Length: 188
Length: 372
Image (cartoon, rainbow over the protein chains, first blue to last red):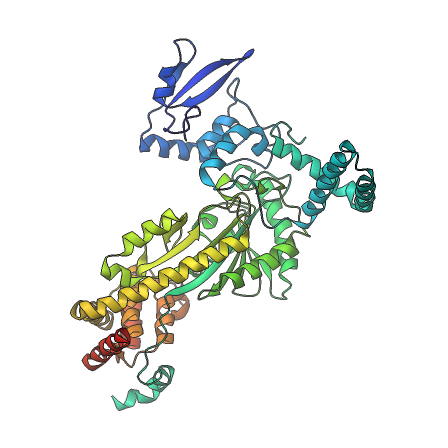
């Protein structure tokens, strides 16, 4: 994977960085690891970026099953499926849909590397389309109220009311999916 | 020789007098959609029981969505060796699916143009096929099936990231569109590498026919879209179609140039390939496919007398291990296969000849057309 600081060179070293009250672990290239003042970026693991180890990692990663996965203290874990960030980094495959939120920072970086776009366009499943319309209408309604366009607000409110029979079922989906996007919320 | 005439009569009708068959450079089109169930762990990370449950759920839904009386779920564990090989050779299933344990399955939708793999890398992989350049057609088949299936099982979907998949490389549309192209001319002219590099710069992936990591046997390549996020399905398909047409045009030009500038090399390549196929007693599938590729180029240039493109197409399938064993209706070990394959090729190709007069005619046709 790419260095998490410069995003240009291959990451080779894991460092721990003080951030606010806690620490976070970063995978960076040698240049970025050395750039920090002594103590700020402390190499804790020298990764030999040889093909052999890579292949070995992949093989090991694939062999790990949830029950066998050992949680490393401080290693974030997807609350829904139990996949740890370490395991995800090794396999480069996610455990479930909620992992996109749980490992948001990593997945976002991968997505930027892999795709030209950052936002989905194209087919939307029927259920999600209703949820999407509802979210859009709610946003538009809020904007209309804020800018005191009350006639438009009334029209939007009626439209939203018209959607409501399905809202009970699909509305919750909308919220959950919004959570997946936001990166903060993990579905229970 | 007269005794063989009635058998060969059909072949002659297939090829109009004096005109070589339309070159089949774009062999086939495929559209694959990756989908996952909402609230279920992705297959790699799920327990065996979870995978078996997903197979049951998705299998039943896919059979219903197929809307065909013959549609059925086939657990991979229940497929015998020869049938498995045949399905692999037709790309109805992937090697990855075969290597997976309990829960892996395929839904036979009752038609050859559609298959659904269950519990491969993702819960659901819908594949639609169409011969020639027909990506839009393949997309319509896959899309229609997907629309019926989404009503029966809930998909993992996010407004921003689209269909959520086990590997982030497939998110968004989850769609991988591909065309299989036959490029012996570019190979002979030495331009193949440049064309592949050009395609990769345009963000298309080029692979051998077996998909990921496979070599290109028979000079066949698969060109597919790289990104799946941020571009609509129709737009991806339109750009891949344009690219495929352009590659086919280059291949056509390369063949003409080769015939104009180095007729002896082309003639040698085609005649030598044909001679080996007509005289070998042991031949492996990849080797046979390479020679059939050269023979196909010769047929499409109009250099081979008595050639029938339909027979060629049939042989290209039948030389593969699964199809061969299906054809002879017995299970064979590799050496027996090499023998039976060679027998079949000798028998089916024994009357084909590279004709000097036809080669000259093909060159003349080309040069006259160039002057116009």
